[in-house]
Amino acid sequence: SLPDGLSLPDGLSLPDGLSLPSLAAELAVAAEHAGSLVPPELWSNAPLFGTALTPTAALLQLGVIGAAAVGGAISRAELDGEAPYAPGTDSYDPAAADAFFRARPLLVAKRLCSLSYLTGGFTAGVLWDWLVLGKLLRDEEYKALKASEPNRAKEALNLCEQLGPTFIKLGQALSIRTDLIPEAYALELRQLQDAVPPFPSTQAKEILASELGLPGGAAALASTFRSLSTEPLAAASIGQVYRGTLHDGRTVAVKVQRPAILDEIGLDLYLLRLLTPLQTRISNAVNRLPTYDADIASAQALVDEWGRGFVAETDYLYEADNTESFAEAMARRGLGAVTSPAVVRELSSSRVLVTEW
Image 1: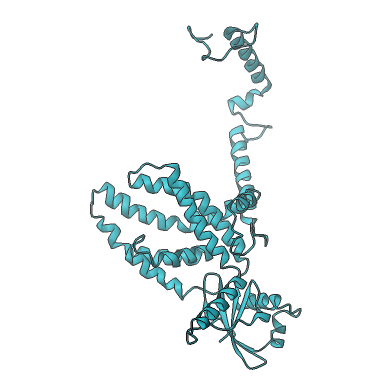
Image 2: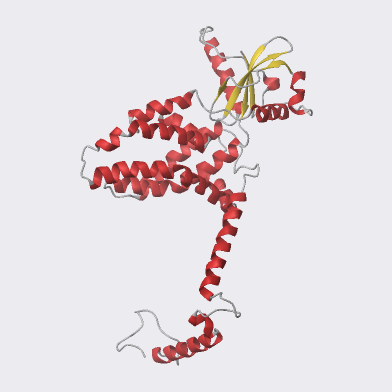
């Protein structure tokens, strides 16, 4: 039965001929009928099918199977060679990225799992130093946090290298911002300016041959280069550089872009933008500040501005244009001694940049 005095909220009413008591009676009958359709052994958790398998055990097994299936599907999700936008100075588009990755939830879930797994230990360590050894033990000077900075900074450097091009680029940007991060972190992250791990040269030379339109693959590079260094002389977040000699005798620098770089960057920028509201709220909560919509909008705008510049760098033809424009500007000012390497246009593309040494 219904409690005395129970009534509908203001503005709501039942159809004509129906009252709260009659509605409750109808629901009770429906519930009793539904219960009669369920075998008694399910309610009692008795063994099923004459075996030792109970409904609870069956549900647990189905749950494990379902979780394994989902986990397997996530682990098999791979970048398919497509990116949400093309390389270029004005191609970065958060709305296009949102639509693109909403259609690829398993890929997003896989990257989130990877980020969580790789950063979990570092995050837990920093929280331990700050929250437990600092806040809870009332260490107002955060001595433990400061003492651990050199080791944590080394961990941060290793993390950037493991997380890939986007975070290497982010680490490079932060390495000169001691107003944003501690000096110990900045010093370690500066190693990313000139000591980024390279990707395999076999891949690089296949990309180079493909961009030059050589049907024989890497083996056909001898038709363009008299010599080409076996390993890169330097590696950066987006590409790496080889030294080569053309058949006309010119020594050249050959910059080759990392494979699927824009696919990776696009996914990471999407996730950074997706997680920005959460990060902003946590940061403000730590500093005991309220979070306003303007705070989140400002943080996302910062991600967008940084992303726009990063995506522009994936177009080596844009870099070629800037290289030539710089040399021309210096010549017009009578500063011929200040110049830049000549671009070998016929061997350059959006993924390969060849300049004279």
